[in-house]
Image 1: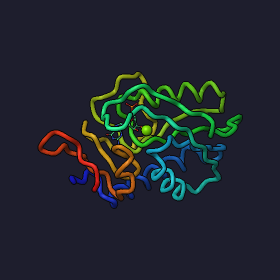
Image 2: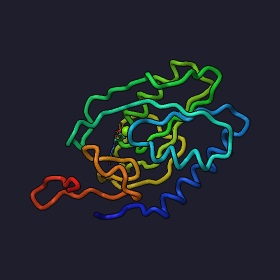
Image 3: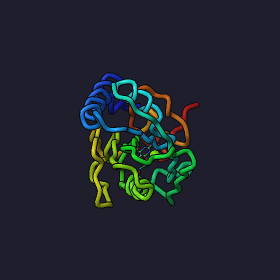
Image 4: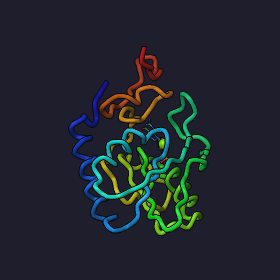
Length: 179
Ligand code: 5GP
Ligand code: MG
């Protein structure tokens, strides 16, 4: 499997993101809302590097269905979102691809009237954006390839890889699952 970002590179990137967050949210009541399931690894690594009082919340967004590597209909589950009145919300997602997910989530969260809503993504895929918005904080720019690891899955597999890898089709064109 081709490693696109090593554990060391991810570590540096998350440390850099944490420094940006620390600077921007000093003195502001911060709630980080992680987008399940892909951003749990990022959330866990990020919050331990942000030396500020903060709360966390979770929201589920799913657009990939099973073996599809192209996005389908987006479903958002807000049941685990905490009260956000007076809070500064930072949405934390694994990857910005078309931007559809983040755009829809930003609209949902703005409707809850928190003090502010911004966004952070670990990865941004090059040349795929179809929406007007850009994430406020980006860990790494990556080429337009399907990636797994560090929380990102294919058919719910590979999330536990400690690096980000490109998932390449086998010779028969199918995408491999771990045995
Ligand atoms: P968007 O709505 O920006 O097109 O897609 C964002 C969501 O699609 C991400 O939160 C992620 O769950 C999924 N996604 C986009 N690209 C990839 C990829 O290369 N690998 C994986 N595993 N998921 C992706
Ligand atoms: Mg996602």
